[in-house]
Amino acid sequence: MCVKTLREEGAELTGLWFNPNIHPFTEYRQRRSTLEEYAKTIALPLLLQDEYGLRGFVAAVGEDFSHRCALCYRLRLFGAARAAKEGGFDNFTSSLFISPYQNHELMKEIAQEAAAAVGVPFLYHDFRPYFKEGQEKAKKLGLYRQKYCGCIFSEEERYRKPNRILKDCEAGLARARELRSSLEG
Image 1 (tube, helix red, strand yellow):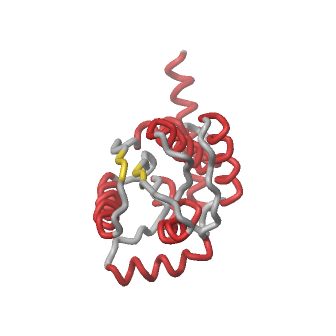
Image 2 (cartoon, rainbow, N blue to C red; image 1 turned 90 degrees about the vertical axis):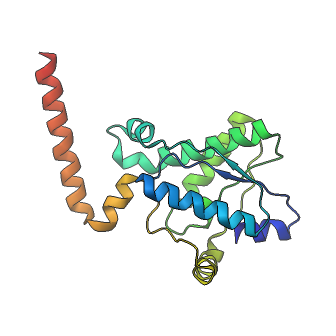
């Protein structure tokens, strides 16, 4: 729905695949393949920054699990801004802005920071009103539809209760700190 809306406004679009947060690799590959197939059917040129970046993503999140979404938005939106700059595009936006499950205002703030830092304007659209229609279209076309945002932590959350996850994270961090202390001497 994002592509349709922007094309109706006269935009010439190029898609970007840049998702270093997605886990596991089979999910990453499935989402990428779905985009590639769909892009062909709608004549959408596509840039692929095809790097499975789970290790880098997890290392960047470090011990700050509570702010992982902001880190992910920053990683992906700054990546989109840089790709737009390198490709000579007039501006950038993101299909992230269709999801009612993401922190829309935080994404917008980070995208604006990326635009200022990189020097490519951010094209803002709130695509959330099209979410349900987009899901129905994907289902009708038989496209793969994701069940979580993509990160390893989100995948865990879809199966477990949040309070249990928090307790496990705190216990794991405590064990890691104890181990580090014992190794340091």
